[in-house]
Length: 379
Length: 197
Image (cartoon, rainbow over all chains, first blue to last red; front, side, top):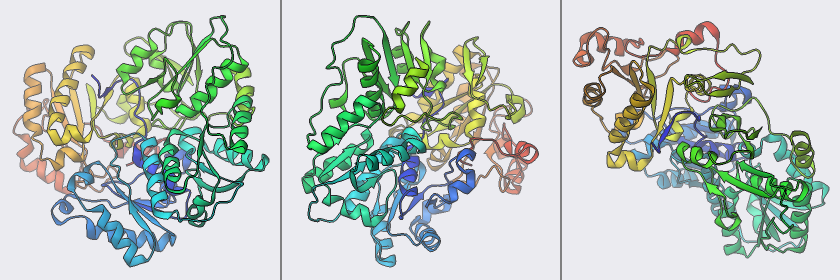
């Protein structure tokens, strides 16, 4: 049955993506939902949840009748007092979205009362975390970015958060930019202040690090004619390519399969965030002589960046069907998918925080030659 | 990582830190049978590590529904389909349906649903309205609303309306819930990986 998950735990919902984006800014987020959100003890547990710059309204049955508007404004009052936010985003959970509270009006009232920019992010806890990241970034861009004069040497970093590759890789991506002397104009997803986000229109180019950043990058392109480049600097080959694309301002999407495919029969599949999986593919084909590498993901996949054989997964049954024929393949995937491990395959665990509960394992450092070093160890 | 076999004999690698005591369904105060945890993806965050352990043991499945399922009323049919699939493949001694806020918001007649399922599947079916919207909090402020089908003592129909049920519900005790994690936490501390309450 499509909706039944019998052996794989659920992925984090879009509301976790919303919280993750907000957490790293100087804004706050208010979720109209009946219970709070927490990160798990390894990220500070309930205490960590309280420090996440977001809170839930804790809506109850009586608000179905009376409406939750007053409750939301009251909750925002205490949230605002605690954080003194530079901006605010509001959204709703699955049950609260059925009540039909006018969330755009709540955002307007917050903006008027507290004199800060505020907007509604239209998600409701039914999609995966990446959709929440995507919608939140896009809402933030529409709310905050102001027209400004272009600076020739600045870059926006869009997408990418702890749930995608872990905190260490987020920091490492920032370090990679610094080491390459790339001037970062604004950072969308990994954390930045309102003052920097407002001036995203000054950048000469946007680097989109995950599929969740595409909507924002496309909007910036449409509004301010800022071209965007896609990819994440994991693996030496990919990092060099990406750096070249950024400095040459050439956003052309190139295939990672330009190297002649070998006939040695080594085949691999990577199940995870699309841009990260594509970086793995580039490394496996170019550095490790793999003849065929497929990617699959339960999260958003941009069709333009998919290769033949790549699959967007929607259900546990689909994962089972996808895995069954992969006998003798090398599989990079979270260990929690191992129930469907194909026969005689080589399973290499790809830890991540996108699944619930979060894994004890951490993703290794992948930036620049980090991916190559790790592949050399595990292959 | 630890190696283990699930109830179907398939090998699985379970994540468990050395210092984390592995728990079984019995540790969670779970009665016999299989849990189907029903709700939106966002609702699945509750009791993360604990429910993952039950899923590994083949004692729990997640039925993740979307807004169209609720708005169209299809969710009732999907719950029935899930129950049929689990009953046919796992042959549990009982089915425990854990449902959430959306069902409460739509005033779902769960008594009718479990009555139909019990008749069709010939196994006891219990329901636990694990609902925050109704003020449920597993840390002890309120009890869950459930026990539509406590088959052992009362049969599947009628008990929900009893004075005893309402007294327990108002007093905030856990009568009628087929798992009670509050006691476990009180004694053994919180689980790692908890992602919601």
